[in-house]
Structures are given as C-alpha cells and as structure tokens.
Image (tube, rainbow, N blue to C red; front, side, top):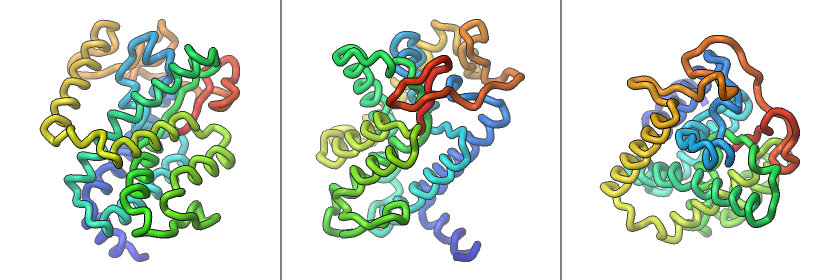
Length: 275
C-alpha cells in the first residue's frame, strides 16, 4: 500500500490515527527522558500501597520497546479497520475506548489483589507492566463477542486463523508463549473488560457520565499525587529521587527495565511486563 493509501486510511479513521500518534509521541518522550519501566509502569505496590494512581493512565500509553510499540500500533490499526467496516463510528469508538481505558487497570489491580492477598503470591506485588495491549484486548473481545459470525476467521500474528469468537483467548495464549515478558494478567484484564462492555454492563455510562467519570478520576488522581508531592502545578512529575524514581523532567539516565517475567517475579529490580 502506497503512502497515499495510508493517508486515506488515516483520514477515514481519525480516532484510531489520533491514538496511534499519541502512543508514538509518548514513546519518543519516554526515550528522550530516559525513563524506565519502574518510572511509568503499573504495579500493585506502587498503585495500592503508595497511592500512585496516575500510573493507571501512564502505563497504558507507555511503551519502552520499539517492537512492543510497533506490534500494538499494528494491532490498533487492524482493529480500527475492522471497527470501520463494522459500521461503528468514531464517537462510539472513543466512548468505548475511554471506558476500557478506565476499567482495564482497575481489573488488573483487582486480579493482582486476589493473587497477592487470597492466593499469597507475593511475587506479583512488584510486577511492573506497561503498554496499550489491555485496551486492544478489550476491543478484540468486544468485536469478537458482538460479531462472532460476521468475521468468521481472523489472521493471528500470521501464524494461524481462528474463529473470531476465539481470537482473544488464542491471542492471550500465543502472546504468553512467544513473549516471555508479556503481561498475562494485564491482557486477561483487557479481555474481562471487553466482555463487560460487550454484555452491556457499561451501557449505563452514557457519554455524559463517562466524561463525568473521567473528570472525577482525574481529580482524585491529582489529589492523591498532590498529597504525596508527586504533582507540581502545572506540571506532573514522578516520585522524587529519594524514593528511587526520577522526576519526569529531570536529567540523567535509567535502566531499560527490570528483570524477570510476569510469572516468576524475578529478583532485584521490579520485574517488567509488557501489556
């Protein structure tokens, strides 16, 4: 496909294009600032224990590996094409994306809570995850549930074709097998959020209530950040260096991520996982 064809597709799906540009811009910013998984990722300990609620949003738009970013952008673009051919307008796309964006980290933290508190799996306390895959898995699940027969087969990573209704679970399995650091919990949270949206559990959240929910979430996140001195108006900064993290606007360099994968928990630096 030539450059003109790509431009035409970009103009035909403006919401998808805007999200793709946002993810690319954040990727470039993170590399310019030399930030690591620990600086922007979501972990149970940082969100629940330290009340760093801003990580629920930051982690979903953060990518520190170009291959990870490219894979998510490719999936985002493919889902955008499916969404457009399914007759779903940009308004519905943005509304549902915002709901998935809010719900995915909440489910992810809840799953970690069950693993840590109920099942005594302490290695999940410091697992750090980043990436837009939660929302993508949510959309994949939503489309597969709404139109299980509309698109009977969907190419999966170029390896196989599976029934549309099975795509989210097949993607979850193959991603976990092929990418050791893939966040199984994060992707599972996206699938559960997608089912919640598909089965109408979020239908009561009209655009008005969604905007109100986003406003309250932003207010509470800002309040929590201000109380822990993580927010300086008009700039948002990360925890102070005394807490072992670098300011968003600070200099210096940091490591590219922790060791270990989402299952083993690793040792030393917080284990990193890609969502």
